[in-house]
Amino acid sequence: MSTPISPVTRGLVIANLGTPRAPTAEAVRTYLREFLTDKRVVQIPHLVWKPLLDWVILPRRSPVVAEKYAEIWMGEEGSPLLAYTLRLARALQAAMPATRVLPAMRYGQPALGDAIMQLHAEGIRDITLLPLYPQYSTTTTASMEDVAAVMRKRLPDTRIHVVRDYHVDPHWVDAIANSIRTYWDANGRGDRLMLSFHGIPERLVRAGDPYAAQCEAGTDAIAKALDIPRSEILLTYQSRFGRERWLQPYTLQTVEELARDGVRRLDVVCPGFAVDCLETLEEIAMQNADAFRAAGGEAFRYIPCLNDAPSHVAALAGIAANTDA
Ligand SMILES: C=CC1=C(C)c2cc3[nH]c(cc4nc(cc5[nH]c(cc1n2)c(C)c5CCC(=O)O)C(CCC(=O)O)=C4C)c(C)c3C=C
Ligand SMILES: [Fe+2]
Ligand SMILES: [Fe+2]
Image (tube, rainbow, N blue to C red; front, side, top):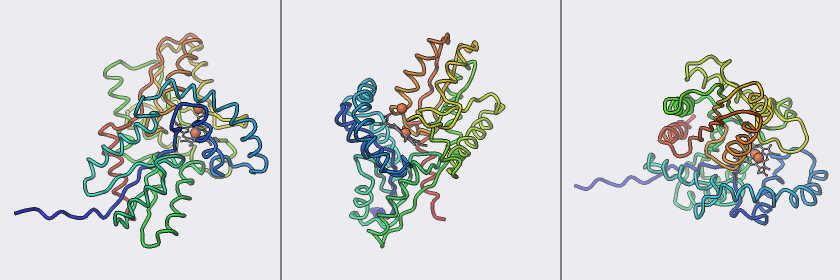
């Protein structure tokens, strides 16, 4: 007797920020132009912003950033952000055989709108969009919600549900805590533990962006899961862009101060990033590590993102499945 094959009726799109298609100035320029003209990302009047972007920022920044990408490029697999997002999608697909899982990027390829159209073309009318941002921000998640709103108008017969955030999801919190505990079991515990999150302008938090509060709540939950006092964790913000004041304390400044204050072994985790990327592998594990040693530190110990670890896959599968409300 053969088992009837049940048709797949649900789709899951895991969506990340986006990344250049090559570590070249031209490809980085194309990527940054799309990313930095999104009004969600740069929330200042475009009459002011566009000339500055086209005439100053893109020409200056693209070649410099291309060199950074070249240092971490994963050969044929491409940029780490793309490579790990594709691996994560494959692992999720294996863990969720009753759901069709596709990876997507908010900027560049594979495009988010195309992924949703593909699921629709396959006959799927119930789609969950899971932005790979554990914490909600008006600069990131909201931009995915914009795409979902456009797609709902285009596909009125399809339910498109967006996961808002998972910053205190117990399985995700446990996955982060376990990655730290496993590192400590293998290498011993450092003098300090720092959680570094991507920053945003402070102005946006004052205007109501819940991002900072979610980073704080997530850090509290991770401390609890590790069974250590919250005071033993330093929460910092990295990747500042431009001259405006961003969320504080800044990661780089903190790293240098810690080294000068006698911290020798520093353990660093980036729980705002689902997968490793330029901001973790180059900015944290290379630039900040160099700064730590230059200021007198000995061992800057970067603990990788969850990437396609089974604990991450299980947590995200649970989060994606729990979207019936
Ligand atoms: C206006 C500036 C930016 C805001 C606001 C911002 C918020 C933000 N970004 C991420 C996650 C990632 N950002 C990445 C790279 C990146 N971010 C900005 C600017 C802002 N980000 C730039 C210009 C860049 C590109 C690199 C550079 O020019 O310095 C990445 C990595 C991409 C990759 O290809 O590896 C991620 C991931 C979050 C989570 C966030 C707000 C919470
Ligand atoms: Fe960013
Ligand atoms: Fe950066």
